[in-house]
Image 1: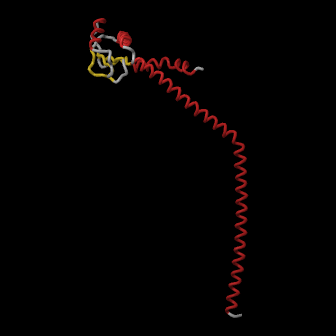
Image 2: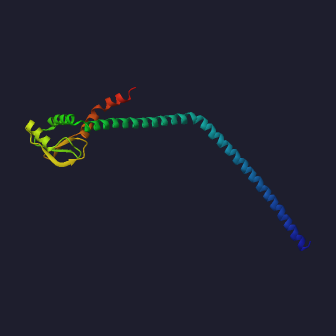
Length: 193
């Protein structure tokens, strides 16, 4: 056999061997693909079965969460409605007509004054309480109250101070105290059907 024939035979044998190896590799790939497809199908079926079993529980949990969200929103709306109601009460107090306002404030002073020597702080926007009015109040009750030049950031009413101790009779504080006492009743009135 000539060298060319030997070379040709080696090449043919190599080609045949490469073909057999390639065919074997293709068969392996197909087997792996089939096994993978079977595994995927098993997993899909397993998840599908599991989902079918768990679906009612998942839906029940979603309903519970949705119900809680609705209640949270409802509670927020109710709290805002209550806050708005008390804010409206505060505005009503602050916007009382002059005589009604002065009468109310006079009664409040009579309940709040302890020594009669307190310093009186009023709102920055106060229009009814003045030095003259305080003088009349002092004369009627035998007090020596003094109106401070300093104005406070309150919606109405006043703050008394004696020896660095303040008695807060501002409308803001009065509404806050009342709110604590009557909020449950307000909730009943606003939200009972």
